Amino acid sequence: MDLKGKKGIVFGVANDRSIAWAIAKKLDENGARVGLAYQNERLKSRVEKLSTQLHDPLLIPCDASNDADLEQAFRTLKHEFGDISFVVHSIAFADKEELSGRFTDTTREGFKTALDISAFTLIPITKWATELMNGSGSIVTMTFDASHNVYPGYNVMGTAKAALEHSVRQLAYEHGPEGVRVNAISAGPLDTLAARGISGFLDMKRIHADRAPMNRNISAEEVANTALFLVSGMSSGITGAIIPVDAGFHIMAV
Image (tube, one colour):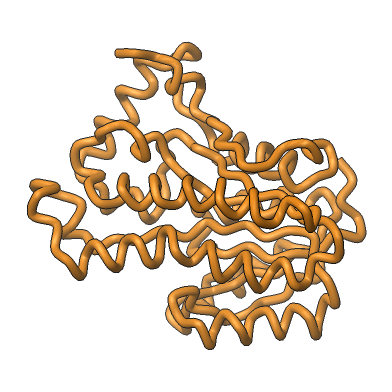
């Protein structure tokens, strides 16, 4: 797939197991110029090291929960890239203590944190991104089946993913007339840094592999391939969609 001439930014690279990193590599391999947004100085050296595997990457510091950081990130993109064709939003976070125990015990601050970082950040990112998309563009975010099913231990993150999916539909509606498409990939469980904080994650993986029609878990590359499709012109008629990449697990009743 030829993405030569396309430029954009990927939010959420933390290490080489990040879904965001798999996507960034895939887009780069297919000719796109990729910007990598890293959250803070603690992650900078990791992202810098990974970026050496890309062709002419652009590294941008950005804490997506900070409005000033987001504004500056897109100013940098405008200065360096001029316009952009895509954004990948692969950001999610909840305090570890909110991912175990009873959902009833979710704290007000924990709820706010999970919803702010995991769902709300897509809204200002879309606002700034669309100003740099000249008549067409693709925004892709990451969700999970817990948006509408109960996963013990996932707790408030399931609520955040539900909010994220509604935001996808709302943003797709608002920005469709501008030629900007907004979609989400609902990936099966993957061994990422964030997954380590989920109580019962290994059980989640085992159950997915046992019950999915394909009798296996997915790979980060399969998610990246879907993101590549959504960024490319091959998906020009798709917006507001939640696309499952889960070996078919989502179709099973039990």
